[in-house]
Length: 331
Image (cartoon, rainbow, N blue to C red; front, side, top):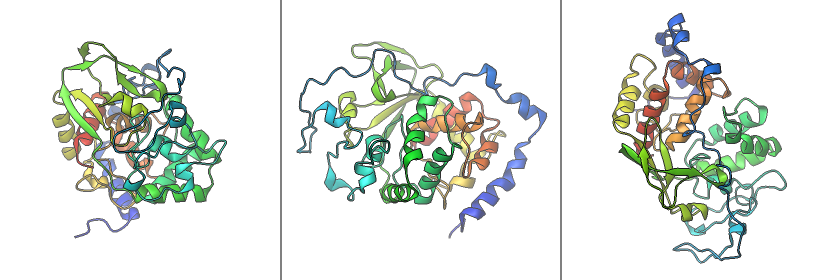
């Protein structure tokens, strides 16, 4: 049985429930004041000074299961990123594989040929094509930004130079891809010491020790070397505080008196309905960034009005817990 028949019906259903959250003075008082709140570094990784890649020494790199051999310069080419396993996905359109110099980078550089992306970008595989297009246009018209400029600067620059046809072609490619299980969520008290390297990707510190996780999500590659090679067989793991998954599940399924159940808009398995995106199994730090950006008013655009009411009363801990739970689900 189909629960929702169209995107306008979903929007109407969600909006109808939002008044129940209570847009009152108490709600306003509960919001964190913008001038006293700092975006958490765990959700907005930015490269640590001096931790970029060293000079390319000409070494040819390869990954298991591929015949390609590439230097690090070739791997980092914005207009020809590696496609280690071309037989594992449909042929990539030119805008995805190569982009259009000088400003439209190949989509596959950040989002990868299989669409799973990295935590510092986003997973696009299986999202509705119209939704992907709408988000690209939101970057283009300025309605979608990030609290930390480094998190959205690339997409703002790229989308500003894209044509609507390029947006549509890229969106249709990623929408055609099946989502993959890309992140393993691990509840823990202690995490590896980490640094943020090139591309704003967090890594375990080589030879480093352990430290308390605190109120953070620490998302790192299972294999940093392969992640730097953009190997789409090399997934990620997300360390989350003990109890956060269960706390997030409670909030997602009941609303906890502070929000509405996620399933009302995102479907019973949280895999999306019509043009409402899937949120199951995606990067927890990416999900957290979106909730923070919407709550604090820098992300706008299509369907965001629905989310503004849903996140208005959430605390930082709520957002962490929800992100941990959603990431733990099958995509």
